[in-house]
Image (cartoon, rainbow, N blue to C red; front, side, top):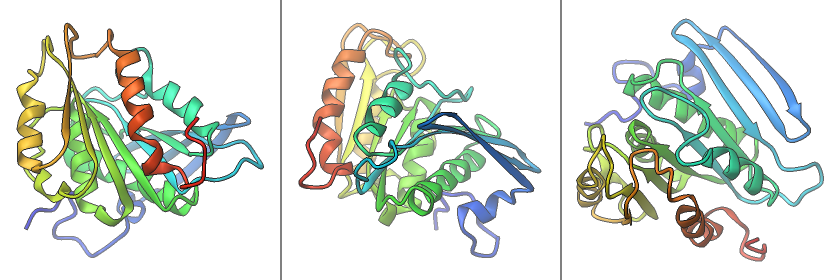
Length: 241
């Protein structure tokens, strides 16, 4: 049986238990942006946590975002993850950005992302989350979505790799969006097409003339996400903007 969170052979635990946090610290950088650090024997897990303003109507969804094989918190394009955090938290949707303990270690990174999902639900009060991952992070997001299926309302990937997505068939029934540049110099667009084929669902959004960082497609990506995200994270009677 597949073990998408990389915890085979261990006693059943929550993702936060699996981290074995020795100590943690957090500080409010702004009234709506929290910086969290969790110290473990296998590295430092850091989060940027965009919180809705005090008194703002809370929505049922949250966004949890992860980077590529070198880590990072800003995401693809022109700091797309930061923009998502600022704008969606203003709509009452918590947004957590994950900085891995050990970038490029698929099992550990999945535990990191799963722990952030647990925080979004247990700490921020979300019912479900949308996961997003760039490049290597696409495989992280897919694995966590399969492993925590009942907690996830949708998955979006940006220039994902196909390695590590062999279990994507477990996404069937979930909204699944795959953005990919047609001139990706690192991972060809066929990688996203392969993941879509394995999943048996989803939509590949082709971005003409763009490369791996999707630096030319912010407006196109943002417009598509503005259509796709509201039913996944907002209450039915909430305005989309």
